[in-house]
Image 1 (cartoon, rainbow, N blue to C red):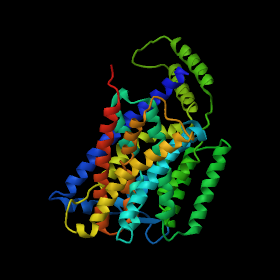
Image 2: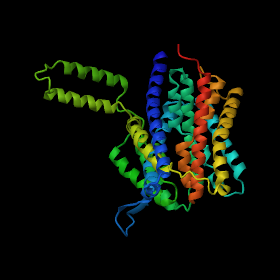
Image 3: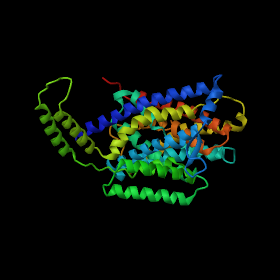
Image 4: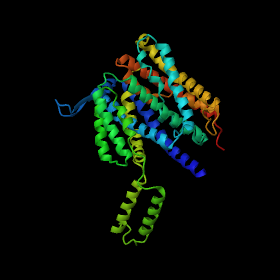
Length: 437
């Protein structure tokens, strides 16, 4: 049991270290975007992201032309959503969402964290310009929230880290469903049908343990293009494709350990004639070790591990640089001020009330248990952190609004609300945690 807890703790700490570094990069690039957009060179910021890029053959069906920001939001972000899909599948099959009892608290918290921000936003915007942005404040940024927990060090209970991770993943599922159902327009159902059929074939092959990363890449690209042209946001393709990635291993752990030990013993049996070079037999052994090391990893785990760094260190900072640059202006607030205020309030108060209230109800009525070593006051801090919506909120902003004024106001609301939620949540948790002796 202790080994299992150590394994979970080690994996989570490694994951959180990546998320912490990624969140710092995300923050730095967001600040850079705001500074750039408000500098004397602000025009170059706008012009850069509007620059048109095309791929394919002109005057054919195999031609795509989009602005740079859309290539980022429709293309790179599909990879981000693909990784989210991998995380969701892992948690369902072997993580904190494997049983209804384990999943209950994160599900209750996520429902509260989505419903109450929407209610607050709708209350302030009913019948006003910008009411269609109700989905903006309902998301939580997993990179930023876990990064803030990491800043508090080893004082944070393992149960609190696990709860926040599981809750944020369930919250992401909700956000994806909202994007697919409410922020898709003029849907071409024939293209969606073709895409779903391909996904179904990939899923069937995965179930039969027939997986080729090259075949998957080609078919995955086709599915992405079909979604892109269908009217449903192409990032949904990333989520669906992730669920077709198999989680089986070609060899189990005991077989791997046995084979690895044998190969290392054989390797040691060869004398080192030249300390700078391996001989032919040693090279063969190294290749064999590499082969069995790949076989002991499931395709899902291998892809998630390989892509996580790219998403955290490259894709998310680029997304922040392209989307966080808002011109800080107080002109026109009489028309869009309510958008700023309602998003900020919905992020901070909606998430705090929703997550805390439904978590309390779930625990009070025995639907779920309070995580081990966690107090309600610490849960309150995490509930406040849930209002740090940044990445997903900015993403939904670009889907909800088309006019520049509403987009700028929404971004200001997201930045303001996320800053308040992040700072306040950090302070509440820090006050509650015992100092390390």
